[in-house]
Every structure is written in structure tokens, then in C-alpha cells.
Amino acid sequence: MNKLIVALIAGVFAAVASAQTPPPPPAAAPTAPAKSEMKKDEMKKDATTAPATTMSKAEADKMAAEKKAADKKAKADKKAAEKQAKADKKAADKKAKADKMAADSKSSTDKAAADKMAAEKKASADKAAADKMAADKAAAAAPKK
Figure 1 (cartoon, rainbow, N blue to C red):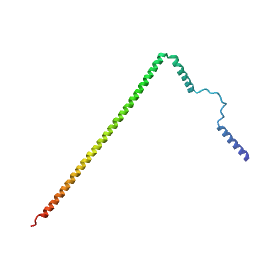
Figure 2 (tube, rainbow, N blue to C red; figure 1 turned 180 degrees about the vertical axis):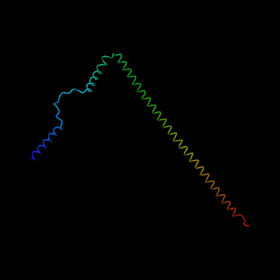
Figure 3 (tube, rainbow, N blue to C red; figure 1 turned 30 degrees about the vertical axis):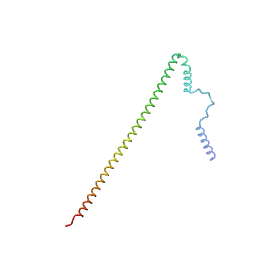
């Protein structure tokens, strides 16, 4: 009886496992190309055949001249933009240099003013000390009564 139950359970597990696995794919059937690939192919065909059949030589020359003019204008615009950028950079560098020089000048002016104040203070202190010494000498030299 136990063997029968075990065999039954094993069969159930096998059936469930086989039901969960996907069936094998069918034999390789020829598949049509994807729509996007078909569109690309059609566009290539249209691009290669359309201009030759619908455009005259005059129109083609006109388009080529317009393209050449547009390329020339784009090149000139790019060159002008590069020239403007270079000029802007040069102006910014010049301004930065002037600002630095102004700051250095202000710093040296401030330093000179501070040095002058220090010299005046020192001179004032020296004068006060000299006056005090002179007063002490005068007091010492004065005859005592």
C-alpha cells in the first residue's frame, strides 16, 4: 500500500512538472521580416530612385548650390562664434588682470598707509619719551632749595 501511494505522488509530481515546462517550439517556419525592416528597405529604395526620376538637373544644381551656401554660412558662423569666444576670453582675462592689479595696488596703498601710521605712532612715542627725559633732567638739574 505504501508503495502505491508513493508511486501515485511521484506521478502527480511528474505531471505537474511536465505541465509547467513550455512545449518545444514548432519546426523552424520561414518568418517574414519585421515591419520596421520592411519600411527601411522601402525608404532606401525610394531615396535612391525618387531623386533621379523627379528632379531635373537644374533643380539638382540649385539644391547643391543651396547646400553649399548653407555649409559656407554655417562655417562662417562657427568661425565668427569662435572669434567672439576668443575675444570674450581675452577681455575677461584682461579684466581679471586689471582687477588683480587694482587689488594689489589697494593692498600696497593700505600697507603704505599702515606703515605711515605706525611711523607716526613711533615718532609720537619717541617724542613723548624724549620730552619726559628732558623734564626729568631739568628737574634733576634744578637747584634744590
